[in-house]
Amino acid sequence: MQRIFSGIQPSGVPTLGNYLGAMRNWVTLQDGHECIYCVVDLHAITTWQDPKLLAGQTREMAASLLACGIDPKRHLLFAQSSVAAHARLAWIFNCVARLGWLNRMTQFKDKAGKDREAVSTGLYVYPNLMAADIHAYHATRVPVGDDQKQHLELANDIGQKFNHDFGVEYFPMIEPVIMGVAARVMSLRDGSKKMSKSDPSDQSRINLTDDADTIATKVKRAKTDAFPLPSEVDGLAERPEARNLVGIYAALSDTDLASVLGEFGGKGFVVFKDALAELLVNKLTPIASETRRWLADPGSVDAILRDGAGRAAAIADPIVAEAERLVGFLQV
Ligand code: AQP
Image 1 (cartoon, rainbow, N blue to C red):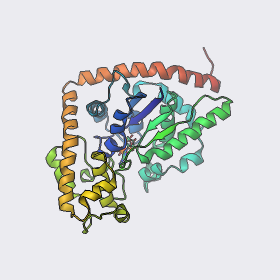
Image 2 (cartoon, protein in one colour):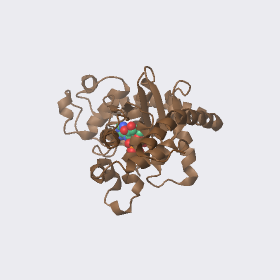
Image 3 (spheres, rainbow, N blue to C red):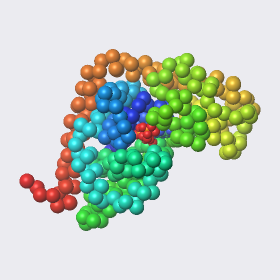
Image 4 (tube, helix red, strand yellow):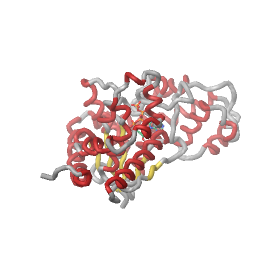
């Protein structure tokens, strides 16, 4: 059975983008794979996180994943900081990856923006830690949204360079698993920008904890243009906001863009947005209430994360110990 690894940052409340690009697919992949799912708090602190909030956000992210249908008995769910193997291997990878490789990472450029000198060095080496997360388990498949594809290519470059430098075939190749018509969900305010949980504007995203009224208001206010929806997919080419909303509808109703346009082509946004809001409410509000149910008993979420961390360390520790031996660290 192939081993899957994937992670999500507890840097806020998960969004519809996280759900369609990752979380929902994590649930589907549980059949037929051995899955290792991680709330990546080490990644989260590459940008400032309030220490009073981080632990709670980590638990809430775990609760959302459980609410979506992650099964912690058959698979693993844990917090990254509780398994030291991630940080140990990341340091080795900091010494394997080349500066020129990291300089090409578009996510760093997006997140650092104009203030590159002021961001943390952790944000810069984020992809090395991500490579370590995956290689620490010898995982071969990684479900991610489209935005993470470049980081996975880098993880392969790092694994292959390690193998070459130390004359071994130790780290396997990783295959990205990018699923569905909404692998990149865009901001509701700007169709050229990815929907993000840390976007300063709450109106830019649908949160998995939003109630029905909030969802309806956000959809109603979502940026669109003045024209009716086209009947053909080609007609969405120059209309990023319309393309985004149609993509969300298609993903949530398990169909494709053409079928959605078959139903709504020629209709105005008032009609389409009403239907989209109803679909979102039907799909997301049960997840929100299930998340609240888990969080009513925080001890049960913590127990799941503790158990997952123990099982994760049992897999990762020997893999990383062997990498350390290959590097030449004294074995005592
Ligand atoms: N807009 C998106 N569309 C599709 N997939 C997305 N993902 C994130 N945003 C979208 C996918 O969600 C998974 C977990 O992401 P993450 O939290 O580890 O990091 P991120 O990609 O940086 O997500 P955010 O929401 O934008 O977080 P912040 O704002 O903290 O940086 C990944 O598989 C990602 O592809």
